[in-house]
Figure 1: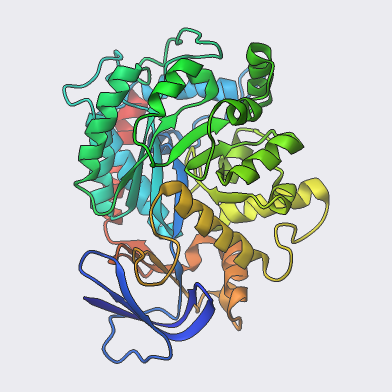
Figure 2 (figure 1 turned 120 degrees about the vertical axis):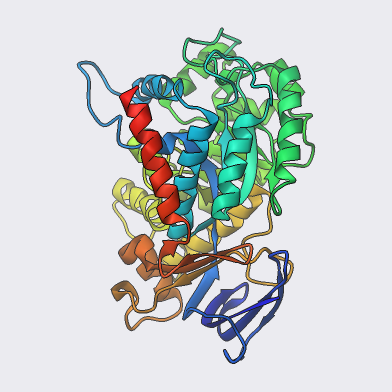
Length: 452
């Protein structure tokens, strides 16, 4: 049993003082007591909030962050960035992926992300052949999760085509491409790998409507019944136009009309929506997986958050391409994009603190999307806890919701002082306990890749 004490904590019914949290040996919250004292508790922080789930990550892309910011002679877009990504990914080994993911997960935990959903499509060797262990690349991610302590949801990606209507794969996609039969074996192996981690989950992830056919989509959705289902959708205007050309419908409308979209689903990006599509997502109970930093970096567009919340929609946040790792910046970017478009302020809240509204909505949507009980500080939930530094200037002379506003809109990730993931104290005084080791391995990996 581990006993933690916080002067203040954000509980399901609001802020409480003198909060003692008892964590069992498996990393679950066993008891929460308010009005308590720190007498027999472990070292504590002044302020505690639930750790944020990261609902969308491509771990390997952390290694190319910042390497696609030079413009060539022609037009630069998501699609030219994708070609650069294909060239980069051709070089990566399983050992490289462990080093890259370990550095990434250290950064996530230091930023306040305590769990991650890995949308993982780098399955095969550079020639497109399965490894002897078909789940070897997923095992590399599991090794990184074990080393850093982050909570995991594996989302093995089914990727078979390069365009709507079953177009043949392109050069550069061979490490991603699979068949329904091979995908079934991969999924089964990843379930075995997940059982080696504490409380890991496994979902299903058709990459996008352009990467599947209706027939293959139907087949893979029968794998892992009841588990999360994630899909990229409506990220780019070109994608929407090509879907209409293929089917006569926009991507989200096609999905809603042909598949039973329900609360298991996370529709990643969903940037370009009509009002009826937006309302359809909200009515389904699915989560919109928003990645504002990546969406800005790739020039995707702005999600219609204001109207989506009016429709009763659910959302969570992810770091996607991992160009920047920051809970605060993802949430701030989401709100600021709405302000820039609509020329108003505090748009993603009906009344009260914008920071509190953004944080709690993202907690709930993120936990639903990752399929794990990680969004509340109460018995029966994982002990994923973020301690905030009351001595950070962004939090001076503030209290309650103003702490969240200060973190998200002013202080950024440096406000995070301590982090417990599944009860494991992984960030202490702002630094992950394995930071130096992870950073050294990451540096060696980057040096080799960039010299190749």
